Length: 118
Length: 113
Figure 1 (cartoon, each protein chain N blue to C red):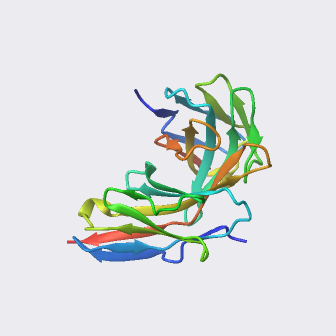
Figure 2 (tube, rainbow over the protein chains, first blue to last red):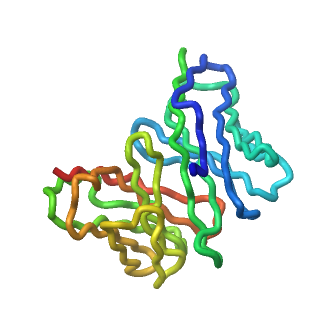
């Protein structure tokens, strides 16, 4: 079963508008973390934002915010005031305990390709 | 401060050839990881090393071996390359295994003919 689901293969947004990229997850680990990474066409993976499962408030980093709804198991990324440079692939990922102990692994979704139109 | 570096950036192999992908980090991180990225699949964990001297299998370890040479370096070896191993390989590191952020290298694009 897929642990991280990103249902939007592609999204379009007008420059300066806000956009929400969806991510749902599935885990039985009570202590988990959720990440969003950006991958521009150049290929590097850029960390954007992190939300811990016990964090009471939604994470924010500049124009990025994470809409964390724990009961619904969703962790949507909101980008405000989109810029042309935001055009990229966006990956949601979950950190969960792996093989017990203190080892963790990241599981990635398949990504959403965001295109910002001028 | 280079962060995470990977060599080579590109490589073409013939089926059956072997090669080692190199990864090094200069952030004094304890944990290191190898992922592969295939079209439409996102990133999948191949192997990881929670700390120097330890390595563990990830989601797709078959056909690969790893070596945590020291705290800085974590190499990935393909003993007998197959076309199914054509992919982009990313190395990453984090302060610890439960860190809130993994830092990624620029990737190695590998083609196996």
